Amino acid sequence: MGNEQLTQQASTAATPNGPAAHETSIAATAHRWLLERIGALWALLTGRPISLYAASVLRIGYGLLYLVFLLREFPHRDEIWGPGSPWTPALAQQLFDQTGWNSILILSGSRAYFEVCYAMAVVASALFMLGWRTRAVSVLFAVVVASFHARSIFMTDGGDNLILLMAFYLVLTACGRRWSLDARRDRRRTARAGDAPDRVRSLYARQLHDARATLTTVVHNCGILIIAAQVCFLYGSAGLYKVQGLTWGGGTALHYALNLELFQPWPALSHLVDEYPMVIAIAGYLTVLLQVAFPFVLFGKLKYPVLAVLLGMHVGIAVLLGLPLFSGAMIVADAVFLPDRFYTFLPHLWRRAVRRTGRCGSRGRITAGRAVVPRPAVARRHG
Picture 1 (cartoon, rainbow, N blue to C red):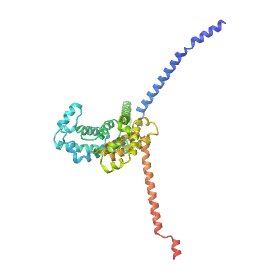
Picture 2: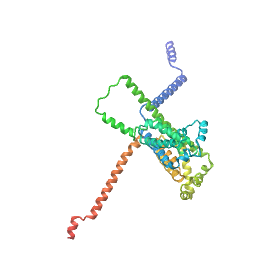
Picture 3: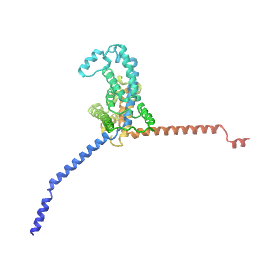
Picture 4: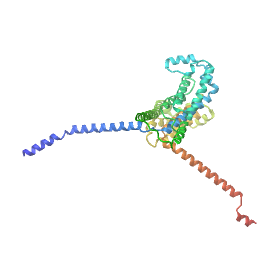
């Protein structure tokens, strides 16, 4: 009997208390889960550059948009940004003293200086779109966009606000590694050095190269994540703001927008669309629903139909309300959510469509030839 009591006491002393052990296991599980998430996030940031094709699409899209914007406003450049603008450099400087902005356009009041700046802006936009020396040109493009935006902030629409943000974000990204002159030059350099022996580097040089590559990858990935977060915040806040409005809740917001003379590039088309109030109400409710739900559908396949509907919505805004710059900026921003495999599949899809078109054309020519030239059997029968 005494031995059994001693055994029970020893087992009780060796086993920890039930609640304490349960709390310890929960804490250990939570700690392990937190470490796994931190490790996964670190691997995402440092493993490899993400969305290189999407970054290139953003570079091409915003460079092209701003180039077209500058060329479109070329006849009116003096009234908007130049010395002859109603928003004079003195007024702009007063606003800069309050907001902290600045612009290279007010460094001199000379018209020749303004024309040189405008030409530089056009060239910078074109080079940024083409991806020539993208690291340096991206900084120049951001300075150009910021300077033109700040010079006459009350003279343009809301599209250049998003282009301004994206110009700063794209400085952080490696947006010239795909579909660019830089990528083409790197491929040629790699092809020329393919047969050459590898250069022997010291340990310090290798460590410095690896650290530079890791830093570039981290900065690029952070830039892409910031762009994605910015677009999500833009859609979410716009949807929540619309929910608070009575016109959006009543389904009549688009009706009032279509009847504003300021947003009627084609009045006949606006009045034609306005004749279908049920369609307008459904479009309004769908807009609010998609904008509020947008941040929550990005992690599944549902994002593809949502992005398609948003594309149609922005095209409708560009055509019906006359805001092509804003719509183009939003369409380009949505491209950041498409994976790289989507963009790598596009050339294959294009080549397949070209081959199919060529086959259809060849079949048409063969059929036409057969219809014109009679077969020998038919010719003998009639002979």
